[in-house]
Length: 557
Image (cartoon, rainbow, N blue to C red; front, side):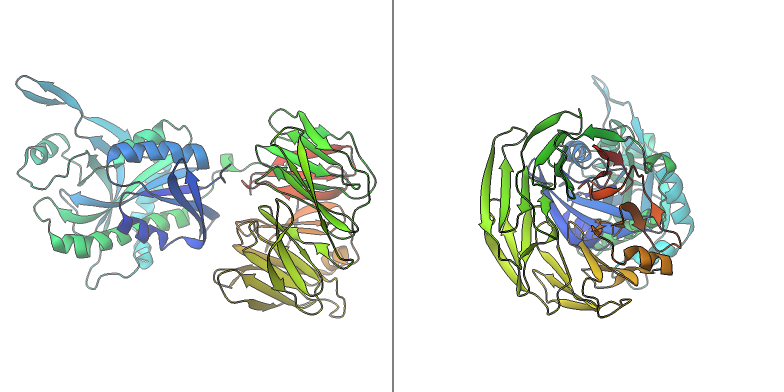
């Protein structure tokens, strides 16, 4: 299962890809979709935090169209862009940017005995993206985004037609150039991939598409200088325009799932005493671990119950279970051991692996591809296959909270007033937090986003979210007196941070989203919740609690 992306940006060439990726924030996650490699990062817009996938198709319209189909099916984006270079025909100087209002396929036609009879076909870009492109082109702010701008170059932006075909048109006296002047007279530039790209988008209803090109040469002016200087510059200009457009793009009301939309309820059959843990498994499944370690599973498409395992023994205090979102596996912390249950897909067959735990060793929150335990001395990242230790990280004195990313590459550990962030490929970072009563050890909660992009920490006094790639604060909220009281002494607290830096908090059985606004947004609620989970795609929430039902509903994550 691939994560849902907001935007996919395609390029044909490596230098175009490099220009695009300069605007996307890491850490990047690579996905293999049928052999084609895609990289997922984020981009901070004015109205939203965008999940952006980047892909280099290679030159040529056929390959580009096929890869667009594959990518849209895998990542289900709202919008897609094709960004790169083009050859100027008229009315655009070297370095200028053209956002395609529409694109002509200049090669369509009929070959007759007395010559070629053109039958031009046209594909339109998405109307709302064209409207936004016009607004960006009217302003000069997009130029501020240009990376390494050329001296004495002031590029202009145009929203006009383009022409596309599989030929490289290298001379203005060629037959193709004459055809373009005669039948595509308003096209300002010629390129190769755009028509097939828009046609693929047209076949995927609801996906908006726009082609953005920088002028790197003209038909009569192609040479080494264009390849060396103007191709990279034009690529950077096109990327700058695209991300200024994305920065100003709004999220339409139709794309916002309500907090209680599409609620599905699954009835539990083996409810036990004690708090339950919930999570999403692969293949669109939901999993609940009861207070005695019993595992129940459901198919979210049909609501059908899948084979699980019975319980039979008490669980350890603290965080009691981890459900893997990438494999059919569950880890359960018992008083003397860590039990790892691996199911054979949706079938009832399963394997138990048991790892001894010391009396002061506890299960770490988050994870998914791996799991982790900690004592006062060290945090151990473990395999979900058999619980073996993969690596260890030293714990700070006075450890109060722990959390890891899905693959264990980012580890966060907190004391009452410090957060220690360990990245697998970087030096550790220490952050200061403020607490209401500094002497209280259990006075904070931690959450690392699945990719490790963000770390969130809540104390009795404040909530802070850091971006791990740059260590800057992306959200800071001082709690009110009532909010501090709600956290004090509450059991079963749970903090979750998404890969967009959004924070959900379960306190005193109530589920809410914490933002920088004055009011905390309480989400859909039925009874008192023991635990909740966010689907890896970020569009579903699940909760389990005081009722006999497991609830799953849509959420704009």
